[in-house]
Length: 214
Image (tube, rainbow, N blue to C red; front, side, top):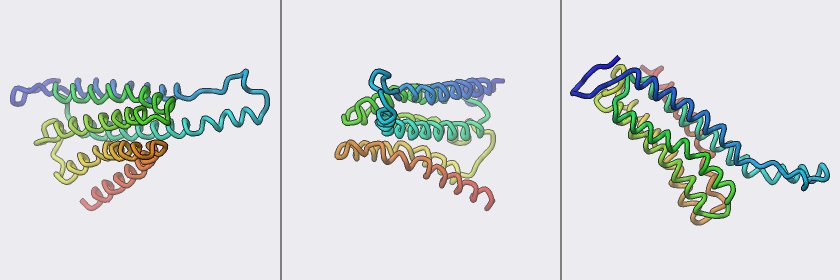
């Protein structure tokens, strides 16, 4: 169903399609993260001890996998939460969201690069920049949707809209911090991303208290 407002087409079907596409891309990207994990070669294993050592060598890669999986999960949850507040999408929102999804689709490659070359800053920087681009494009998509309630079903309080906007910068800010930290201590580049689920959980608690206060 299409409606015109200031010569801008707002389509509910567009929003439904971009949400379905987002679900597919997020699910595919989260699954493709597993490609960075390598099983020990059969010819290199001759005892239980060697097998345990082979698995233990994969622990840093598993750590990055779990961190990236949770990161994508948080991005997906935020995308789901914001689109549920919307009545439809216009061309600007569609293109902005598509760029965001392009960077989501690229993250498995950045993850593989970071796990294959953990000691190289360029590989870690590519991962951080990828995370930054996902969050920043998600921010611009939401700002476009929420400005003057342009694409929203109903008016929401300005402080809640601003809180959603500021939360959009949580992961990009962590990525920038990791980028700087990795320049001096490349082995700790991935460490700050542990904060993502913690800060997201605190943000959800704040939103719940805000709703109860209303």
